Image (cartoon, rainbow, N blue to C red; front, side, top):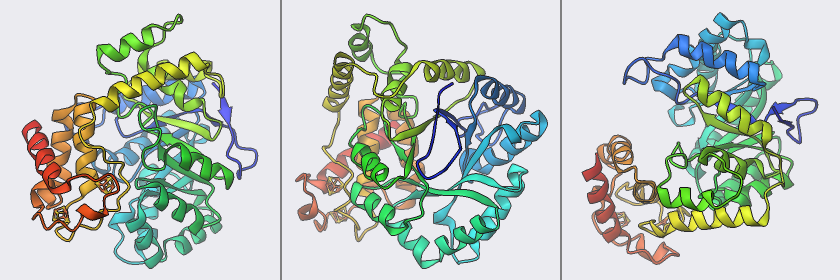
Length: 383
Ligand code: SF4
Ligand code: SF4
């Protein structure tokens, strides 16, 4: 296993592969029904392979991931072998006492007296305002002082401007967690965000290096692009190597669901080095990215300038789901997501009343109301 450091954290070696606990093995279709024996085997395999970073969150597996992981660490006697990361569910906070309520519940679930890496979950400009309004950082500093959390960071889903504002809004961030992969290199914080954070000595953890598994199930045309390289590699290895190439990245999280996946990813991590990809290899990534981008439905960059919609439509999210469904051939999956998190919540394209307020704000010149109707029809059909 390879290990890297966070610029502001002395003496801590973190494995370049982290075990993400949002797709744990299940006994049934119910996300809360985690297979404990299979999880124990994964935890032990990860430890054996030298993985020392575990990432979970309050909400994963309908709130069961933390507890299952805590129980597994207790059963396998391995809490001391891992750095444990979890996240505060910012959007659920209603008053300033909630930060402590969440943390105490998480410590209980995880059966530990401290969280090594604590993140404010999925910050956006809107959620950052909520953190400020409810004294979230003051609470986090108190938890850090009394030892219940060791290192503080945030995970992020918004545009680059919002990322910079959050980075600059608190000088003591020690790390951030961003989405990054060879298709999304300029999406949300993207590569520019990685550089911006690194210049301020904020280490980066990368999530979605495989785009939720979509890059492993890429169509034949993409397989053929990578197959032209003389050294055969699995699609997962190509995608992970793209992330580990960056010196700003300390660790990449993969949401794993079996011992086989742990062992495969650990082998990739063992072999990958930063700044090692050749120009020819980079050209293959460019070609594969171009293939996906051609299938993109709406040229939305996720910049968010169209927000807020007075009718509550989550415009960039609808377009992101529409694009992902088409680019990665995952219409049914994104359709279900769209229905559960947007359409049924009054945030889907069907809630657009065609007032036109968003249209002049879009730098891409997207005919937003028409394209939302199109996205709604497509995603609704896939659900
Ligand atoms: S046109 Fe539709 S999406 Fe745009 S602001 Fe009006 S209601 Fe919202
Ligand atoms: S629709 Fe336009 S303004 Fe809104 S996020 Fe996409 S590119 Fe930005």
